Length: 242
Image (cartoon, rainbow, N blue to C red):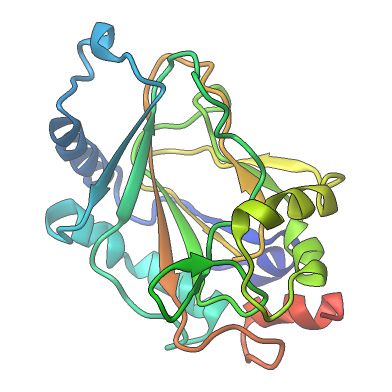
């Protein structure tokens, strides 16, 4: 059962075992092959982050995208038929227990608005909702995504309908939500998190021993979000007075 009140209050919900663990394990095995590394050869892990992707939408990836539990969560959050199904997970960063060479762990929201030239921006009328999919076991030391609980309310107050560049606007979003408590997106392979498009989050340092595989997938909304949209997403607008 989806706790929609928790989503409205916190800006995210966890969907435990949205698919069986074996499905996520199978997807992870394919990604190991794709990046040309091995879970049994840690001496080959030399980069802190390796980016890979699923564009195939086949095998275990198709099962992940078509999860009935995920669909139920998106229906509850976006409204039934308020979101667009997809068959592939898209980009998947793999974080290794290797010292970082650059700091890519700043607080932000994902780009959520498509522009006429095909580029992306952020705006107060987002086109997407974010889904994080754990493809490996993630504990508190395994570079879990950090989530500022309730930060979607802060963002709703400062974003307008006009698209803005995320790199220019990120410091303002981070400052607006700096007092919020932090939750960690931990769990088992097959767990998923659905985030409000305004929820501020960040990567974390890897202090563990096992690489973290996690997809970060934008699911498109049928219509851009606005305060008049009849869904849980829009209740934040109304309650924040945006």
